[in-house]
Image 1 (tube, rainbow, N blue to C red):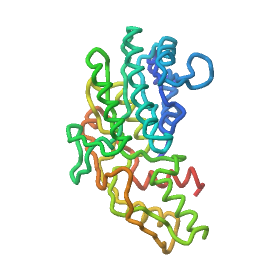
Image 2 (tube, rainbow, N blue to C red):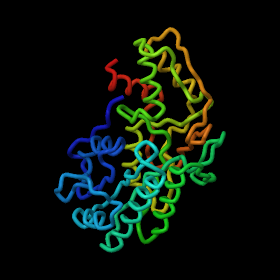
Image 3 (cartoon, rainbow, N blue to C red):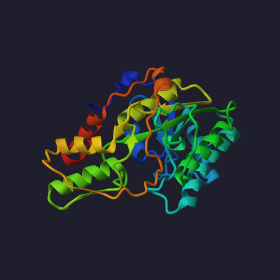
Image 4 (cartoon, one colour):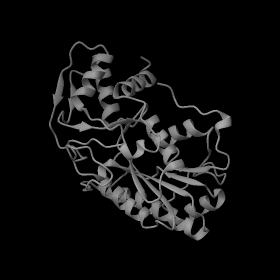
Amino acid sequence: MGVCRHSRNERLHGVRVLVLGSNGFIGARFVKMFSDKYEIVAESYDGSRRDHDCTIYDNALSILEACKPAAIVNLAGKSYHTATNDADIYESNLLIQLNVHEACARLRIRPKIVLCSSSAVYASSRDPVEEHSPCAPVNTYAKAKYMQERIALSYHPEQHVVIARLFNVVGPFQNRDFFIPSIIDRLVRYKKKEAATVPLKTLNAMRDFVYINDVCGALSTLIERGAPGEVYNVCCGSGVSIQNVIDTVVEMLELSDVVLDVKEDFVKEGISYQVGSNKKLLKLGWTPLYSIKDSLEAIIREEYGS
């Protein structure tokens, strides 16, 4: 599967999209995929060549005043993988969201604001979770994202707010604290005989993995067709077990046998089984193009050259 490309004549003239978190895992890929389609600007739009800390209101105000975007995609904010403590998670996610809305109100502009939230807000469920399924965030990050959603929706209908609940996003060069890149790295090291076993916290988990290109395509769809005040699941709509991921990577790496060291330890996410329903997003014309096998092949090819 290739990276989505858009020709110059497809560019939506006048659609200026401010991407907060443009240097992050998803943000950088979105910029790469859609810079030919939208006029994309980032936190450094004022010419300083550095990303501003939008947890500070004056920074958010100056950025929005300088670029006056037609749409904002908020991918900023910290998680367990980037924060120094729990307070850092709350501060980064909540203040950025609040400052964006308050700055828009002060400037009297009404861009479409697409907030990238997380499926972590849902309770663990054996049934596919829909947008109206119960929310029961069980850890700091999930609670912060849920509160961030409440902040955003409190500005509706005066402001055009769309919530994108991203499920388990995967792709090349993701932080290796995440499961998919960590297990691929461990299996590669095992193949090179750099490790005697492959350590795992658990095999008893099911996830809905969605490839980064599909996620970026979904965000573009929501910029153009997302209804104000609505929440959309961004997912493949199918569950993949941890064991299936391991088996698939083992086959791709042509390993004959693998010694797994499973601890059955506590998983910080606190969710053992989660699959999403993407019916609502499909109705807008979006569809996922990458299977879990396609995703794993792309990661291994781009990161390890095989």
